[in-house]
Image 1 (cartoon, each protein chain N blue to C red):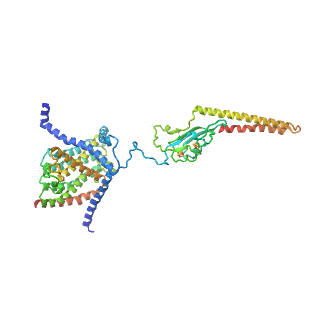
Image 2 (cartoon, chains in turn red, green; image 1 turned 45 degrees about the horizontal axis):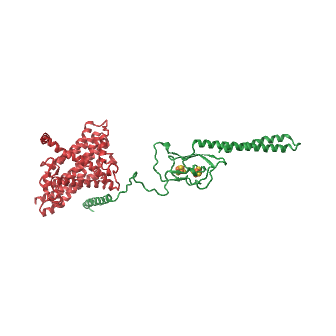
Image 3 (cartoon, rainbow over the protein chains, first blue to last red; image 1 turned 90 degrees about the vertical axis):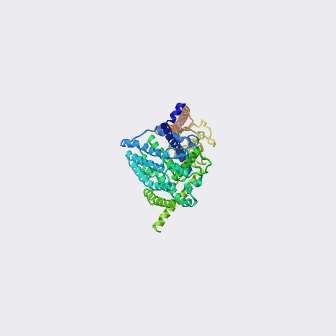
Length: 347
Length: 219
Ligand code: SF4
Ligand code: SF4
């Protein structure tokens, strides 16, 4: 027993164990979300979705996962083998690494670095490299087009997204995500979406800009995770499946997992920036390490739900419309908000 | 409109239409589903639905009207006229059965469920049912043999018919012979009559009765 405890207290072992927590979370979350998304999609269309495997089909995602594990792993002959194999892992690593600075609860954050959100933006940009790699290595027109669109989309939406983050960082004066969350502690009235924990005048002045920034970040995050209405990179009706057309079996599953993990990631960023992260909406009531994890996941999942809801509501944009939204609408608005916030914070 | 108002108008419309769409989808989400969990629950079929054919063999009088009506020729019937001495029973509508139906097959794989065979049947023994789950692994299983006569039954029936035909033929031959004899006797009485036309008549007459021998067996 003591040996085990000593082993667990070994810094390297503790590090690995702590690093595994987000991974386990991602796996469980992906299973839940796949089920959740299918159900929401089906009910929006007045269908029922999975009903056969288990009660209301709850174990269907597990069955799907087992199926994907058993599938033949096909690598096209003319594909660039090395890049082809590397791409899904790179995509997943980019997403997974971003979880490191995510304050899951008041007691748990992978790495409490001061560059938090900056690191997060940088690490999640790795995803686009992976997607391009996948599209290029597949040696397939559709994949390549999917990857190119994906790259164009992510790069253009990164700008309003990062500007929105900049606005928030200017308000908080820190990039540390844990500090950001703590600054919004104390109940729903302190969340940044309602103006944050500031004197009333400043609060009222901040509120409209925060709301616009929230919308801007929400839209650009949806574009970054390639979901409808911004799912051009994998537009089924045009590009088969986009950059992951040629992938099968476990590699495809990893893409899938990364996509869902990314979805939670951006939702979590929204939550941390505007909705108080892990803080309880009732001040000190129901707060604590475990409760705060609960609030964090609940808030994150509600934004995941919002994403799913929008996915099954809106049609896909055209490529030029996509660029229009990013460059002509979101970016100027974000710039304007950043400047206005600068004035407010200085005054 | 200036470019600027168009620009802001577009943004307003984009957001408001997205919100309208979201309201619609969330309403749909909480409204009841329409899915029918098929193998577990089934839909009540309408009264006059046309699915698998049902045939009441006991009522069939072998008129072959259904086979003639079928546009895809999927009803195959073989009939044999029964001797009048045989009693084949009656249909439920009170019609006397006079014909052996030795074979009554419906190839349901070919059937197009038009229902055209149902109406001509004088005894109403064909019926469309609401059974629609009758897929098979073997194509041949889709040929439904409604006829209940076993091969032995068919053989005995054939024998009976043959026997009856032979009897009839014998009777006819006897009758013909009698008639011929009577004629010959009648011809023989007027002695001065020339023998040559008489000789011509008799063979012709004796050949004629042989004719009706064949039709019954053919049927
Ligand atoms: S339903 Fe139509 S196709 Fe089918 S057996 Fe009757 S007549 Fe033929
Ligand atoms: S029409 Fe009716 S009675 Fe006539 S052969 Fe067909 S099933 Fe029999």
